[in-house]
Image 1: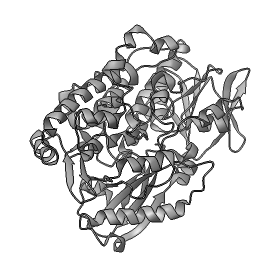
Image 2: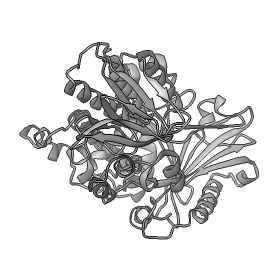
Image 3: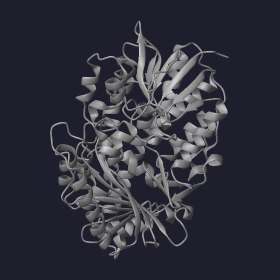
Image 4: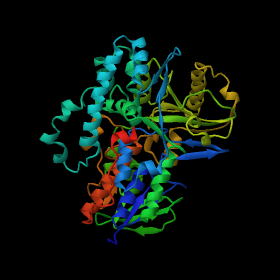
Length: 509
């Protein structure tokens, strides 16, 4: 077994997965985390018996999760107690009308035809396209490591231009299927998962609504943080060491190689390999010698942010697990968020009630609610009053809930915790408070996204939302595996083994 050492900066999902793979291949791995617990943005807040996921609140693209657990020699079904959510979302429009997205095709037919005659057949065609985008996209783009120009630009990838429709904008492309603006919004809002506006996202991302309906939206008992706990168990089993409540202040570079890190108290730790799971622009700006690359990253497009409320409520609310209030002025919403870096006048609002799925998330006869309002990221040139925007966002949540007959929630809130872009930046070192890292527009995807190794320091690697393949929990797991494989290959110690075959789709759904 190798005696090589590796330091991982940050205990997000990508860092934990990479560390586990490296340890399984014989490296001595130490993970250094600034916060008191692992998970990064997939964090957990708890207070008075109420438990909140701060990041993702649902498990989407389950086949990717299962494959990545399998790559670590583990069975996802044994480690997570998963419950399928159907309907996946309850969409509520400005006039109070609703659309429940469900895998029950009879229900979908009835709902869609009531909105637009002929929409059900168009919906089936849209799912067929999403099926192709999902399977081609995950195989050709998501699961591949583009280390060189030729890895991406070659004849084998030429068919992707028409297979994945990368040059078609997602929302505009919906005109091939629906005329109703509500239906166009209902099957493009998932682009926000990548911090993107559907008015600029490639039509490739139709893979998201397809996967949600075909493979399901799931919820692990204990919340999404149960995924972190499962991964931490695998990491400990592999021998990974974790150091919490410790911040890395500098990556030591000597003779164009990373030699280790300097901690906040001045202590130095050496390593043969350094892997940064912190937000990539933060790593370049704060942890590495200035070389111009930090400014290049700063000039790239960044994803949006959120104002998020975490409420402990002294009564049970009549709410489904996932409710999304979609604004009629859909385009104006994204103009305000992406271009103006502010909060829309009439924002869309997402509300998660985890106790509908796991009663342990709230005390008996009480409720736990998470409300999320998308907003622009931090601006370097504009004045942004986040206290004022937080208060307006809270009022918008209450106004939206009144459409469902919930008019007195504010009288039942025991306590409130909230995050805004300043919070995201302070708590997780996210540059500009962008919750999804660098934007996922066409020129920042696949080969064009920052790679997993530094261009000059060949033993310094990266994993996480702003690197290839991108943001999201399952994507972070893929990123962790890809970078670990690259590290072990380039160290000459890659070995196959401890691999478990992924379950067939039918076993999951």
